[in-house]
Image (tube, rainbow, N blue to C red; front, side, top):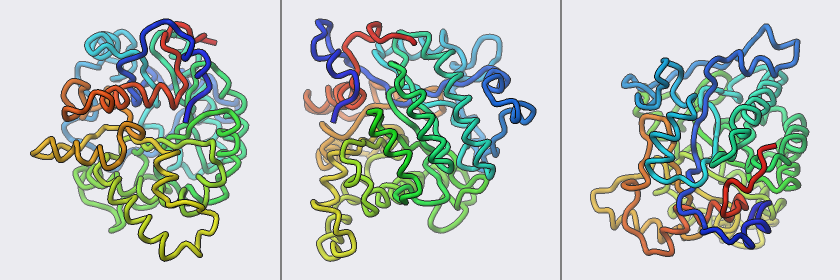
Length: 371
C-alpha cells in the first residue's frame, strides 16, 4: 500500500519523517471565505450546516489554539505551528477540515456537494499554498457521488492533496454500490478515502447509536467507534475492498480497541456464511489488514498500558495504525504520552512510517509543490 509520491520519497537523501500527524482540523476565520468559492446560486445561502446536538459543555477546542484576536481555534497557522508543530517536531500535518461542516446531514444534495467543492478550493488556496508540513484532504459529500467523482478528478491531482474525507455518518452504508463512482475516481487518482465522525445523529443522518439517540455527549462520544464498525463491515461485505483492490480506507477518530474483536468476528462468520459473499476470496481480516488504516486518537487508556500494547500487536499496528492528535480539539492526544511503550519498529511505523507509505510522502516536505 503506497501513495502517489513514492518515487520521490525513495530516492530522497533526507532523513525519513519521524512524526506525521494524520488528523489536524483547520478552520476558516469567517465563513465568507468559503462562500466566495460557491456557485452564484448558493452564495446567498452561505455556509449552512446542522448544529451539533451533542456538545461538550467544557468547550470543544483547546483554549491555547484560539488566535490572539479571538478567532476560531484552528484558524491560526502561527498558533498551530507554535503549540503543536514546533513543540513536538511534526514533519507532516494531514489537514482533515472543519469538523462543523456536517455535509451528510444536509438534505439538499446539490448544495452539500457544491459546499464541499468550495471548501476544498478554499483549503487548497489558503492552507496547502502555505507549503511546509501541510498536506490535505478533499472533503466529500457522498450523497452526490457522481459530482464528488468529478471533484476528485478535478482537484485530486494537486501535489499536496493526499486523501478524500467523508463524514462517518451516511444515509446508506458506504458499501452500497451507489457510492462506487466516487471510489472508482479515488482509486484512479491514487487517493485513500478516510471516514471521520461528527455528523452522527444530526440533520438527516441516522441515530448515532444502535440503541437510538443518546442523552449526553458522553454517550455519543463513547460510541463513535460503533459507527466505524458499521461502515467498515459494509465496505467489506458488499465487496468494495475486493472490487477496488488498489483503494485504501482510513478510519479516523474511531478508537482502536475494538478492531481485533471486529476482525475475529467477521472471519468467524465468513467461514460459515461465505456463500453470501462469494466475491470475498480471502478472510475479511486480510482485506482490512491490506487496505484499511486506523488512526490512534482518541486512544483508549487502560489501567495497564501493556494491555493496549497487546491490542496493537493483535491488529498488526506496525502495518495498520497511524498517529493522530485531533488538534485543536479538547481531547488532543500528545505524541509524547498517548501511546504505550512499543517495540522500535512498531513505534516508527505508527508515528510516521505507515502514513508516509500510505500517502506516498517524500522525506522532505518542502519538496512538494504548493500548486
